[in-house]
Length: 379
Image (cartoon, rainbow, N blue to C red; front, top):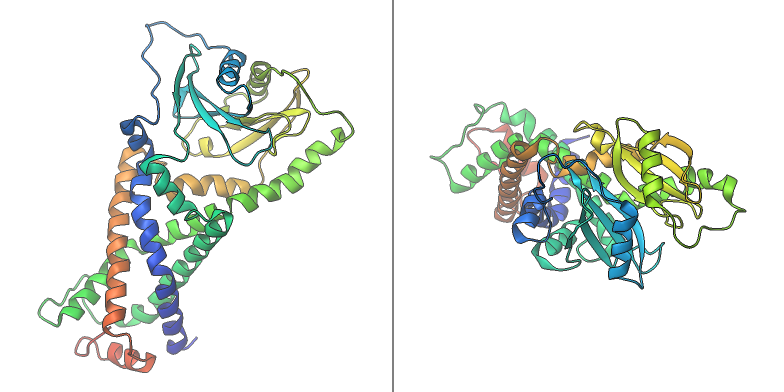
């Protein structure tokens, strides 16, 4: 490609995506620490301290019964667990077993069965930040649009390397020409911080695009692998009435030694079949805790029907989600993500300022200026 082509790609991909990327960086700042902020605000619960020597586990069926008693008009959709909070169990309630939304999200002490907290759905600062970051309150259309912005970000970074890379060799690395025009200082800072954040921006841009495909990815799994698992039971009646989540979880743990429950879908849910629980199991290391295997359990008998691994495209999604928010290495990685996010905000803002100052410059003028470094002005 010619310089003019690379310059055009860099200019327009940057302009189209920058305002949305600024919004994503700003809303992403609190989301990096969503767990800590939710606990600080009291919207999430911690497992209480118990007497020394307490090793028992509560009846999951009793926990589910308590959740249903709190919302008798609703049904449980999922049981949810977290690898880093083994003493908590969450119950997701909805008005229908196959409803795409939820009506309540309850937290219980998995050791005692004590009700701890109801997460305030659709309320509060963190919910606003999450919705803006995920779909801008526009549903799947907004999610896919923001995913496209991630693609444009990657194109902007790659084209920026081709436009500026060869000519920045004429400047000593890290140089900021403070004795020249203000615009040159902005440009040098923009290029320097752009190099510092380049890999990180590519990582969050690519993982953000993958995360935006969350619904299509799981829809593909449901239409292929899950449909194949359900096919042998198509003629059987759906399970109705009470079923034992306790028996299903116990069977899943026995079928997947060394793993723990991530979440389990109730029969009739889009993540299960009309006759089976589907348990999604996670490993015990920081990496394997993000990868899922499945255990399919007969809801009537509590016996395991089959086990398997999630396909590569689902695994890619599961790995990209925590990487996007720096949720792999504890607080240290989150602090690194915070610093890089702040630097990226400056890179994006300075790019807008530089474009505005020289918005009428042609590609030929740009190339001529770059070739004259460091004597000529760059914009």
